[in-house]
Amino acid sequence: MDIRQIRYALAVARERSFTGAAQRLHISQSSVSEQVALLEDEIGFRLFRRTGRGVETTEQGRSFLAEADRVAQDFYGLSDTARRLTGASFETFTLGMGSGMAGLVVPRGLSHFADIFPNVQLRIITAPTRSIYDQLHTERLDVGIAIELPPDELPAGLIASPIGKSEMVLICHPDHALVQDQDPVDLALLIEEPLITNELTIGYGQIVTTMFSDIGAQPNIRAVADNIDTLREMVSTGLGVAIIPRSSIDIIGSPASVVVREIKPRRQIGFCIVRRRQAMSRNRETYFAFLSEALTQND
Image (cartoon, rainbow, N blue to C red; front, side):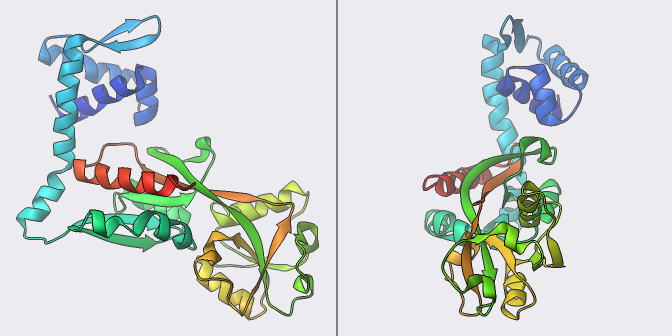
């Protein structure tokens, strides 16, 4: 018996399907079936029975898997135990977020975290969307906040839940001719404008290029920055215009060096909380549940 067999069996129980479990684990169905069968041979009873509606857990299987779930949580918590044994005063929980997301995440999800979990050191890493996904895979992050992607574009092994939306707005230099009144700016007027954007294949930049594609045009991309602060500074010097989420400027207000205008047609961008599919330690599951609830309750 090993932890892999336990993981596979728990996935079948949660999905109520060997096929669903295989998709969740991103392995073949035959591998799931083989490992579950080996586990059943070792424990001496069936965990599942097939029905017309899929797979059901047997009575013995329910009892066994309930205890197996507890054991799995303890197993994933061994790193926390090791940290305590080495005398570390704080347990750490690492959260990655994209540039410009602090206005959405800090007041809604992090403002009370320290009060509720006083012995947890919360580490915040700001990184491009692609890097957040990579660091989740390599377990350098526990949880990520990222741009919401279509389900078929989400990297394998990760799951995401929506937490909110923000309207995309235009920022320009205060002397730009397009922003001399308060009216929304037609996107078609920006086709020839030098555009400063963020990640082109994923994240803000992908949304922006899609906005232009929807009106049958291509943006005139002058520069690509990997964070909102740099992008905003470039706009303030008159190097170009940019389209960014309103939430990325709401937390600090509109700086005097740029002007913010709505765009027509309007476009919203979605944000999500992302984690690995595999279970975390019991403590980390608790921290994740708190953040997930806090970030969605005001949506």
